[in-house]
Amino acid sequence: MAPILVRMSLLPILEYPDPRLRTVAREIDPAELDDAFRAHVDDMFETMYAAPGIGLAASQIDDHRRFMVIDVSEAHDQRRVFVNPRILSREGEQVCQEGCLSVPSIQADVTRAEKIVVTALDAHGAPFELAAEGLLAVCIQHEMDHLLGKLFIDYLSPLKRDMIKRKLSKQRRSAA
Image (cartoon, rainbow, N blue to C red; front, side, top):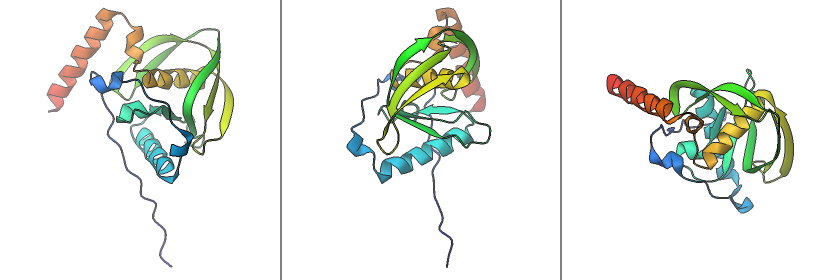
């Protein structure tokens, strides 16, 4: 018997300043959470791991539905899918150096809540609530911003954002 091959695809990630990154994602009807959706989620994980990254919002791959994938583990064995996520509470404050697959090779300090409680549906439509802190809390907040059309660089001064835009433009010109 021939082995079953699982075929996944790497998806193109939108990069700043692409205006599609500013699109606010729409809620997902739980009826959309079918096998095709779950295959798409698998493609998102493959894309995220290959980039490499620890989180990927659907908005970053030009899919403007309200969901994201996250895995902050080094072993890639803590896959989490958040459909229609909502933050129920925030506590404390932490400054973390963030990067983003849509803003390649740029990192900056961003202040976020230290602890959060989030509610969402999983890829099968089952509701769950999760208390998160540290890196996981930062990642959830970062990816949820994408679903609202917001980037981590929006937390920076206009001068720093302009410098980043120029640096990315220069990188693209030299890569071409």
